[in-house]
Image (cartoon, rainbow, N blue to C red; front, side, top):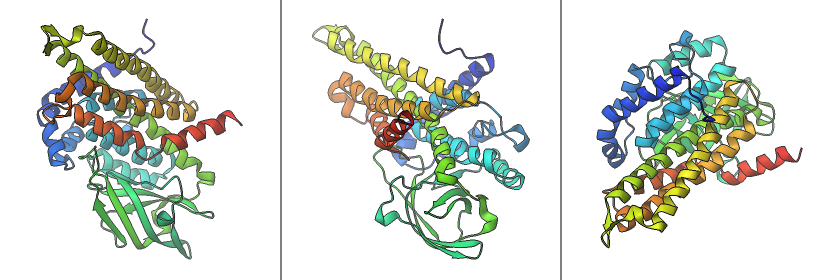
Length: 370
């Protein structure tokens, strides 16, 4: 009996996303990658089908699905285009989730409905390590603040309608909602190794006015809420890595059955069999970790350590699967005629996106040593 038992609704979600990726996404996936442009048309189609606001309550126009269902959807999408998987995870896990859990009714009504209607939300990543060039310059003006500084990554930055922005100092831990186009913020596109269509941006802030009315989390003691958001997103990001790894394996298996060397299909060679077997073993392990962490979140259990372990393992898996699938292809694996190089590049970016494996390991150790 499988340890992962999907209910009928979850199987239907998996089938719907497979149908969507086959008909709508696969034919243009390479073009999306080649152009490196945020795929607005695909996101619009997902929104029309109600597939971009999966965890948002029906009250606000969403589908109100659980985290397990979100992971199923993200894994299926990421097999074909990890950039779109990333857009969905940011929209749901880093924007909708904190609004759902911590926003008052006014914020929920306004911004969750925007997300459900196809608007994109962005997230301004705050550095885990306070580097000199990333330090806050925060000046109080009564209940408001003026902020100047730099942020290396704004997720969904290219096409977001609004941004969630955490601001932390030794005295202040708050979350603000910033509208795109507001005075004091300048966004620049990022040209990264992978995830070229995910819409990452950098941000420069100069005297950005952070008003009391724009603050939807007034105090985050000890950074606990920010850590919770990161842990929640870790589950979604892990599902992306899992999807990439599964796609890499399927591509390698297909090629190994077709490629002839010395009068034999290369799938008959022990070294090739070993590489594909190792990828498969790691994928099955990763899938158990992803859906265990998702199940904990759905049950209201503490998912912090589980999500960190899952993110680290799946991040390593994506890179491992990409690299070894390239090895199965030999010299062809390095050519852009095959999608392996894209899988590998996307997996490497995702491994380090928004959080560092080393910092996650340190946080796991701190929990163990309490």
